[in-house]
Image (cartoon, rainbow, N blue to C red):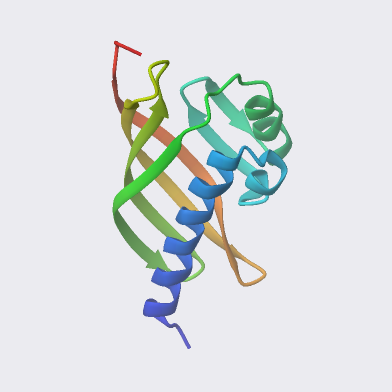
Length: 133
């Protein structure tokens, strides 16, 4: 029997894990949040498959910061869910102050696989960059 409240909580927890693992730069665990056949349309290009996506993020020279996801709209239909969220990326600057690097919108498709909600598709769009960084 479907449990919309439990699905909502599980997907929001998956969104939080995405941020926490990204911020910790734990790319192996982060990649496990995606389906094997995922597709990700990110700032650096379009990546197909978990292995390609993990190889891409491992090659980045990203500053450690904080990913903050908010304003999530979740629409569940069976074992799939469309999720639209806003992202705010904070990074430390050279003077030790916290700065906004960018804001964007995520358009995601989650799929329930063996009881876990995984990202099957992710698109980052509508970027607003802090050009002072």
